[in-house]
Length: 67
Image (cartoon, rainbow, N blue to C red; front, side):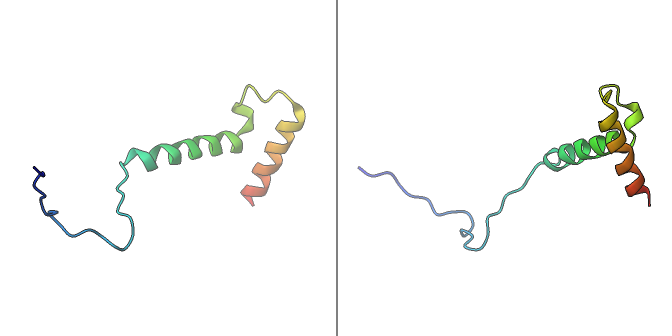
């Protein structure tokens, strides 16, 4: 005895893949990028950057981005 088959409620798409992302799948990476960019632009707030070469590099990057 075979199982009955049911028709699909809508036709299958042959074009692209239809994937819907939740809002946080885009918001969290964007937020992380903004936070890291803010830390790079203001290196004096970073307490872990005690190496003068790294601090100088971040200050130089901030000067270049400020132009």
